[in-house]
Length: 127
Image (cartoon, rainbow, N blue to C red; front, top):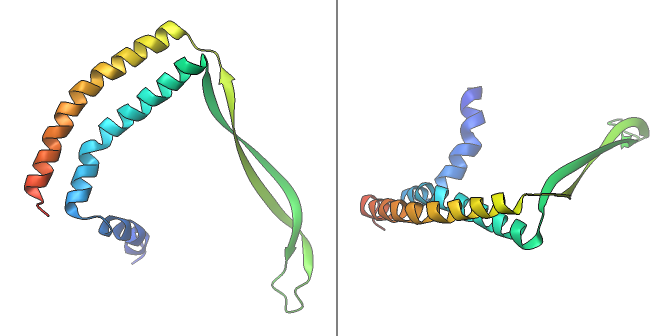
């Protein structure tokens, strides 16, 4: 029974989208990823450096309420905080331009295949 319970949230998430929406999402996934990479590479070129995302995790002891009826506080819990930040990182601008050119060339090919897949999805799952 437990394996079925662990799949319940996944089934609910999948049930929210129609079959056509799922098909369209799958068909456009590579094009969306390519678009994100183009935006990121263009931003790096505009800035002149890349931003490396990092996280800083801090833990500190804190007071927690016990489950006793009087609700006393006890020491022994840990408060975990995560802070996201970016660190500037040097890049080779020529390599970044070459990467952008390659991504733009790939986008044209992906657009054609995505258009065909969208047409197939709409034919397979009419609204």
